[in-house]
Length: 394
Image (cartoon, rainbow, N blue to C red):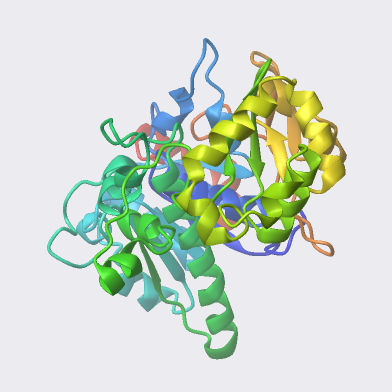
């Protein structure tokens, strides 16, 4: 094992995205993540993904050991308490009140393991009038302001093509756990990390609330641009699109000179950030006239030489061959017997002294590591495991 979290044991409960992604982040950084799945079908993420061979499970369950355990049965709850007693972190994303219903509420768990850190990811958090509502990522994105801002201004709110609300809440949950670990180092005491989907989304809405409070300004959907930030957009080339960000004054001067419009840098209509923002559509139109006469590769090379931020809009087929991705090993490849060679994002961020890594592939079978974990961590005998299995607990 390796990584900065080596030596930490994480118990992951729950399913789908938010809780498991939090567990993935911890596992990537070296923690021993024991994933508890319901006997039978296990986590629905095993079937999620797109295309004829869904492969999302290979990513979100990597670096984890699968234990099948029925948390609805008293004996299953007892085993869960025994596992948590020997753990550093518990991650769960059930609807608030579920742990309490099963007799494994934070108060009960802290009674047997005072240093335990409990990460609770839910739609609305553990408190407030909406706490007991079911909440998925799309609702958090809507309430947190994301959906209101995404899309074209003359169309209904759109969504990003990924479950950003879930992964944001998971990431903040992971960050909270690391902060709680630091506190535990000083005090020996664990605590609860309460990460709500809608609040995680709210955190990344920049000045949405503040602009409203300061002047009553209500930001709206603006398509592919940020209003008043110009030029910064996707521009059409002869064979595709490229993004260019030349909105900072000095960068804009270099950009204007590069495309043969050096006079723009001294023109009062375009010289300042505010002036360019006032003429955003006009600038984008003129820049598009220039990019349409060139290929993406040509514009990319020209901008790179001039020191202007720009880049092509990648799909997966471009990512897996790009030299920058290859040089930094941004993509990890897994050889799987039925899925073939599966690419996935590598461990991130990169640490210079204690880098994380992908030590084990996602477990293929539900409960693949049940006997291994319950015997090594809890000391259960083969006879005890057989009895649990006959009772349907594991």
